[in-house]
Length: 291
Image (cartoon, rainbow, N blue to C red; front, side, top):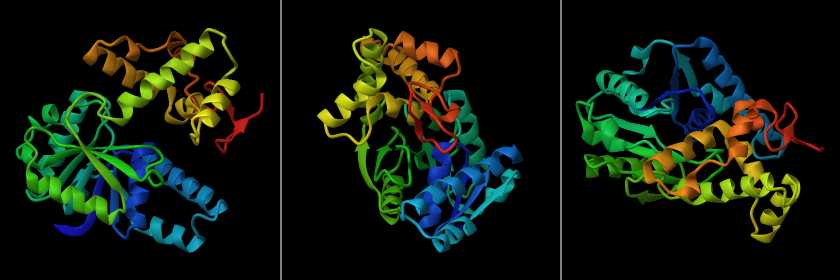
């Protein structure tokens, strides 16, 4: 087992952010996906993210080369076996998470740390299929991962104290602040932010104000860096819909019932920045286009 090697399953936005955060903190990362095109796309996405940081003087070309040099990719699951930490950032449903974590459990060393990224999926339910359920823990990252300094640490009922301590040490190495939360649907950040975003969508649907003015009022009125509708586009409207449906199903509270306007946008594949149109329109660099 190589102490400096981290295995990562997943190629999406959160997975890319995790990989960059690890690599920028001098850890070697190997990303697995069965689809070579998805891996190549993830590398392109990380390169693009760093280029945007370089434009803002947040990184240098030398730092970009150093970070990307620590990131390898593979379509062979066995190549992950020597890692000391395994991140899963791919499963969208409980059964998919279980299947992925079970496979990682089987190929990893018994002392390796198993981490699943989660917003609404139970760590305890996933851990039931593992040989060593005590070494599974959940982390909830906010996007963009390499910029947002806070992480939610989710301990399952079977997660050991040693696993929690190892996770704390890793997050300290990554210069991340963390809060430990009880295992409950949505945890803290998702439960608090979703009703705000949902209500902003209702206000827009009811015609009280334009999307631009709604965001302007909330952003300036409450000293936020981004308005709720722009934030929804940033997260991805399909992702938000999935979170809301999950919480509404689990908790039965009307504040999590997805706004009809959100459902309409998702049906029309207006998913936010990822499709260049949501509540606002965007150019290929992710910058808002004036109406």
